[in-house]
Length: 280
Image 1: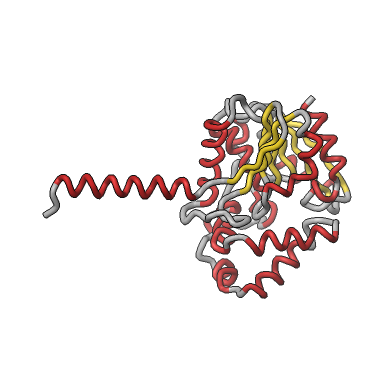
Image 2: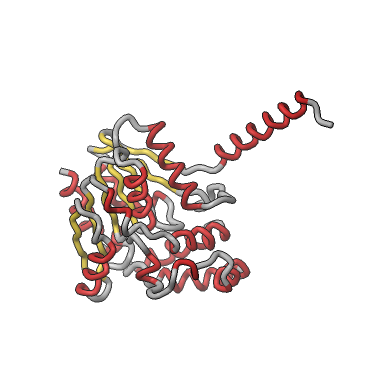
């Protein structure tokens, strides 16, 4: 039978182990510039470097924080829910490392994270800029599919996990072709996907597809700029964004034609102008 001393010792070891785990799973942040903080959140699988072309001119007036998520670009991957892990890491970073409320700029899933921060803690951010981000990806990418039918243990996910490196590289190369119009950037995007922890890639993306904050954005009060790429049809894109952001009141939506999902690659001058104008 265990003694009280043995039980307490075991509990202390468990707590120490959990604290060690918590410090191992974290975001990576690179800082540049001085001034009011701007947190740059990348899209899925992308490192903070995806923002490098946009950050340089802003760093003369702002302190820029470029975030990379767990499971990507060589960072340790969580074995729990990826989405909530990232949200918790971002909150901890803002609360512990920043002396004032940041502006948060997020691309794709980074925009989803930005909105989640503003929903969870209304006083955490000063304003938001959402770059080709959606409040419910599944409603656009998988219209008509019910959330309960998006499962982690699906045949599609099993197939992704079973792919060898060559098969996965072939798939990601095809996907990258549709994400930007800049040829030399397509290989970089595909490489980021290929370098990702495979389980994080598969299950993390499933988590994102199961997210629906279309109603929750009604609680966001900070000024929000939504920037949308128009790869094909302007009217169709306008309808999608109107539906996605119907409940977000304090917003401005701008559209850029002749751009893929990575606006920072396809239309960097326009993106920089929109950001600087909104921050004035």
